[in-house]
Length: 99
Image (cartoon, rainbow, N blue to C red; front, top):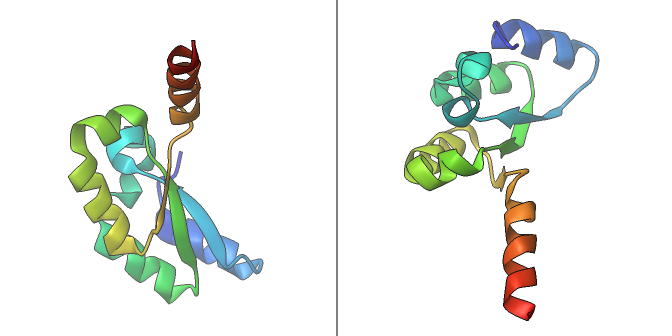
């Protein structure tokens, strides 16, 4: 999906984008392998005047390798970790606890 992050960053900064949301290569795998080196990602973002304050993470990833995911996020400057599947899990827990 995102094979050349540097080229992508150059293209979107060229059309005026300043903020973007990432997907963790730890949980989302090969499709986002170009984001695996957090120091390189941060350098590319800075080189193009971009910031990434948030990223998607899989629930499984956060259960199995949360410290590694947090380290990756911090290195880039991410302050918001998002998982799309947590809300459904939490809603189920809430329903069970209110019965």
